[in-house]
Length: 182
Image (cartoon, rainbow, N blue to C red; front, side, top):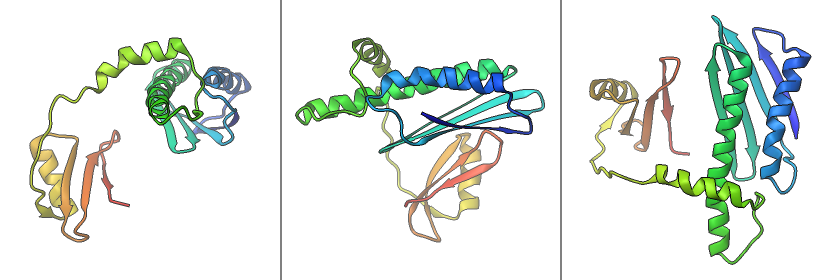
């Protein structure tokens, strides 16, 4: 794995760099071949809050996790745990599809322990509710107002300007984002 570790608003020490590389190397066991792309790690400190953001671009999937806490080392530990869970979930889905489509080689290595854990976590993916509603054409600002009015952190609407389905969402920094069809 190639690591691209950078610090925002502080200097990354050799000890911190080594810790990140050691922790992320735990993910090697999930891949049959070494990850060819660069793993991007951003470490930052804002008002005493230590944030870690890790992005791992793979073929067909982008793994990304972010964590904030009062301790940089704790943030790194939690972000690696999050990535492990994402990999196990994705691995189970991919391997199940491949087994059904007649045993094509998977991106991830087989591990009965990881598969067993995923079977327990799959209960979290149970669909418990389906909603249907007509999309009212509106502009982005009106969609944000509607989202705030119903108290949700996202809102699906028909964009009056592009006539496509869009989603507005509230970001963790309190600002808003827009997802457009691609």
